[in-house]
Each structure stands twice: as C-alpha cells, then as structure tokens.
Image (cartoon, rainbow, N blue to C red; front, side, top):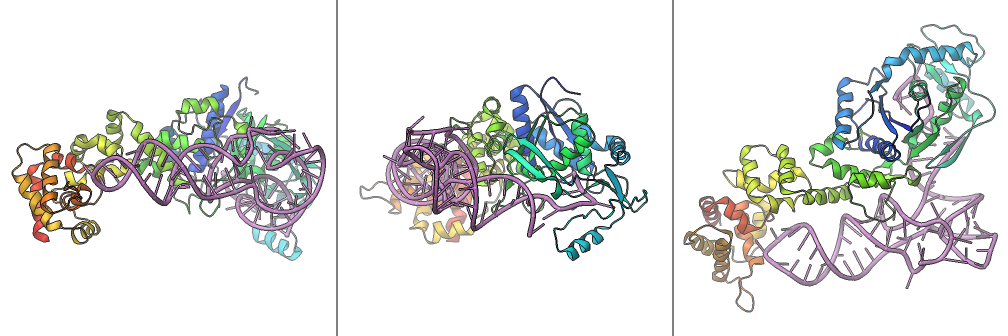
Amino acid sequence: MTPSVPRFRFAPSPTGYLHVGNARAALFNWLEARRVGGEMLLRVEDTDRERSSSELIDNVLESLRWLGIDWDGDIVLQADSLDAHRAAAHQLLDAGRAYWCDCTSEQVQSRAKERGGPPGYDGFCRDRGLARSEATALRFRAPDEGTTNFTDLVRGEVSFDNKTIEDFVLLRSSGLPVFLLSNAYDDAAMGITHVVRGEDHVPGTPKYLLLRDALDLGRPEVFAHLPLLVNEGRQKLSKRKDSVSVAEFRAAGYLPEAMVNYLALLGWGPKDGVEIRPVEEIVERFRLADVTPSPAFFDVKKLQAFNAEYLRALPLERFLERARPFLSSDAAVGALATLAPLVQERVRLLSEVEPMIAFLVDEEVRIDEESWTKAMVKGKAAAEMLAATISGLEALEGWTADGIRAAVEAGAVAAGLVNAEGQPQLSKAQGPVRVATTGRSVGPPLFESLEALGRERTLDRLRAASARL
RNA sequence: GCCCCCAUCGUCUAGUGGCCUAGGACACCACCCUCUCAAGGUGGCGGCACGGGUUCGAAUCCCGUUGGGGGUGCCA
C-alpha cells in the first residue's frame, strides 16, 4: 500500500458548507501535492448520518472546483467502507485492545464530577467483561504508560503522555464507527503519506497513532497541522457564527483566483514579498515546512483589496464575462457595455457592478436622499447651477462627453462657481448635476455617464430635480 | 481543572545568531493628481509581550512568567 509518490488528502465532513478554513486546508494540501508531484485525494467523511447530506457534499465539491482545487482519482465516500471499520474495531476487541462499555455520557460526567478530577471517561467498564448489547459502545483500551510522539512539519516534536489519553469510543452503541477510527483506518487504506489538516486535530493525533499501531497499519510519513483561521475575537472560525462559506464569497462577487491567492497567504508568505501572483507561481514557491504555527485572522478587507486588484487586471472582455452572472437584466448588460472600463476600476466586488450602472437601467432615477441633501441643500448655488446647465445642454449640438462637459462648465460659470481666475470649479459644480441624473454623489465619471444616459433622460432628470428645489 | 499548541506593526507576513536604527502587503492618516468616487504617485503612523540566561553579538537559541488559542462527545 505504499505509493511511489507522496499522497495527500483533503477529508471534509459534509456537515456544513465548505468554509474558508476548510478551503485553506484543502489548498495547502493541494499546493504541496502539486509542487512535489504527489497525489491529491478527496475523501468525504460522511459517517455522521444525522448531519451529512448529499446537498452538502455537492456544495463542498462545487466550492473546491470553483477554487480550482482539483483531485486525483475517484472521490472516496467513507460511508462505503463502514464494514471494514467495524471489522477493524472487532479485531481490536478480539486482541484485548478494546472493550464494551454501557456507561451513558451522563454517568461518565457525574462520576467525573464526584471525582473532582479531569472530566472524561474513567475506564469504569475496562474489566467488567460486558458483552455487546444495544446499550454498549466499544472503547479503545488506551495504554497507562509511556508516551506517544510524532514529528509535525509545522510544529516540530509533539509529545503526549499516554496516561492522559482516555479510553475513547470506537463503535457507537448503534454500531457505527466514530471519526477517529474511520479516519485512521482510511488514511492507511488509501496509502496517505502526508496528513495535512487543521491544528484542532493535534490533540486527536495520539489517539490516531495508537489506533494505527494497534491495528498494525503503520504510520503516515508526515504530519502537518496548520494554524487555525480565526475571527475578530481570535476564535476558531465557525460556520455557524461566522459568515465564511466559500459559496457566499462566490455569490458576493469574489474571483476564485483572488480567493486562492489570499488564502495561500494565511500562514505562509513568499520570501520575495510579492503577494499577488498567479497560482502557478505559488505552487512553485510554496513549502509546507515554511508554514507558520500561529493562528491567522481572516481579514475580509485585505481579501477585498486583492479582489479589486484581480478585477482590474482582467482584460475587458473577461471582466464583462465575469460580471454577467451578477447582472439582473439585458438592459444592465447593455448599460455595462457602455461604461465597462470606468466601472471595472471602481468595483471591489462583482456584486457592486449593477448598483453602479443602475442609473442607466432604471426608467426613473432613484435619488439617494443623503446625497441629495449634500449636493442640493448644503451645496452652493445648486438651483442656479441646474438651471444654467439645463439651458446649456438644451442648446448643445451633438451629445458627447466633451460637449456635455463644456455645457456643465458654462453652467458653473453662470452659477458663479469659479475660482480666483474665473475658471469653472467642477469639483463644486458637478455635485447637483450628478445627483439629479444618477441619484448618487459618487459614481463613474460624470460626462461619460451622461453621454451614455442620453440627452432626453438627462434633461428630464435635470428638470425634475430643478423643479423639486 | 487537565492535556496540547501559539506569541514580529491594528491585521497578514519576511526574518532561521551579525546584512535589522526589523522589510513588504492590507488598513489608517497627509499631500499630489483629479469632474465625484476609484486608480496612480509621494510621505507618514505603527511591532520583535515580559523577565532571566547562553553568546563577542539575539527578533532569531534555552528557561520561566504573562497573555491567547485548541482539545477534552456514543460530532467531525
């Protein structure tokens, strides 16, 4: 079962959507596997029937594909080899390394409380010689002495006293194997040489090793426990409390390239300091052994900055393609086409595209009241500015950005919005026109926007705003 | 409680005994550019948790303290 090339695996449990922490674990497995020319396997740990579902499995797979994390061979469904896991457990029972236990978790807890010592199972049924029944779980008999050690590529030597390891459950009373057993067994069965997973698995590793040894399954060549991804409270990211599913980021308009690039930088950094680079280069430079051991905060702000940069770097045609799924109508697609380059350099997320061109799509302009107050009420000479601009635009021959600009500048002069030299001050004058025509105080450059809006709609909106003042 | 792990700017990192008066990125601030907003340019703010060692020399090695996190399920 020893493969000729290093073999990695990502083993998600489909008990929730794939979140960025899992994605990062998958990515680091993938990066190292691809760099060293190893294999990347995928195993779905669906032994918890209650919480697993095929819908969740699809979500995990879909998210991985979206990120461009591919895998070798067929997906292994852990539920398919439950019989082998059960057989392994019984092998342990026959060898005297496991025993049946009928303690309920309430009993275990109350005994621990009475004892005053550490919580956890106390080995109550070790020598009771119980037979299997509907109420019994099979427990592994952990050694009382010695230590269990392993070398971790990220953390160095890690050692556990065996006497701190409780007799953990192998088979539930329902007969179903638990994670630890299935996980350890399958890694061996699949010939996994590199176990790369989250730091939260460190305390379970001695149990994993004890099991592999007891079953005579050998040990993986390499362990690497990755630093956890944490939230602003410095707590492990939770798919329940933190909104971090990969699918949500996708829906919000993040590019998978940006996501992968950012994720690679959590716990690792290229020596040359160049952070934004193609994934091929990351594969070349990545070293599992260089991963830092301390937890990393998942910083959405930085992710957004990366996304914006990736968006801007896209050729125009590609940008249009990427934006399309985020546009709700053909009209929006058409509107974007007229202003695409100007929009492209102003959005951080693809979901921001449509709001930016909404003024071109909507029949009636939707005025943002805060912007209105700022430009029309607090701004200087708004009424004069609008009136003068309207007449200038009415007289305009042709309808180009340059012509519109000239008319607005003339409006500014007429409204007295000029500098010491008598030159129009567009920075002050453009506000009322912008809000009247686009509804907002910020947006793409005004004159190009109005050219796209057209003479009729521009003038209608300008007149309506003028009337409202 | 017990076990395990972690500790460089606000955040992510570079740094593996002298190249460090600690470098980059995001964020933040200022200025420039400018029709708003972006983008771009320039500059700035800001860090080796603390205390002991080892060494000619420590962000880098050792010990301790403090702080933080993970685990402690018949979840994975």
